[in-house]
Image 1 (cartoon, rainbow over the protein chains, first blue to last red):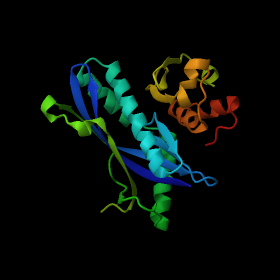
Image 2: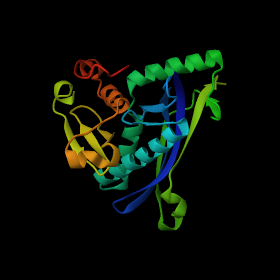
Image 3: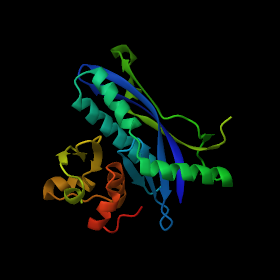
Image 4: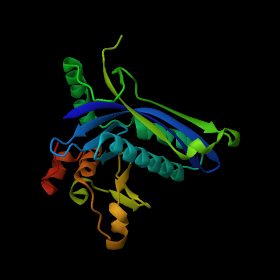
Length: 160
Length: 74
């Protein structure tokens, strides 16, 4: 079964001479295996990532770690904050058009049947994919920057 | 699959994953190397089907990919 999901990611990445706070809302298609109940999270925005787990929570944890790795890789590929910001924007906003079609179909289905995944917050499906990358100063850094966060929400409500 | 479906592609190994680049596409930077980094020891990468599916859809080579790996689902 396919479920449309939004992922809200927040994390800090270190690059050449800068620290950056990265926040984005992305679209993921959650696919639960009908036999063993495991989950895959396939990226729609961003297109170039997927991850899995025995549970949805575990899949989210694995995906969060993979995203942290991708952001570190992007930071290593760029020399300036501005170049990193542009790379992160491209990464998140590149759309996987095949999975977008599946995501849109899944949104229609869960709206029609009022389906939801137990334990996940429900949000409006018109939430936009967006990215915000901002510089962090030394004084703004703290221990929490060692741990990115990511929350999955399911878009079932109609737009107002 | 990549040899047959993605002309001009290159791969770069990272610590825990490898990156696939191809002309005209955004890079795919998150293909896991497999449990315990076995790829580094064996030179052979074992990638789960879900990652292959995502990769194929990202580079828009799903149909071609099925000719090489028929088990790739939609």
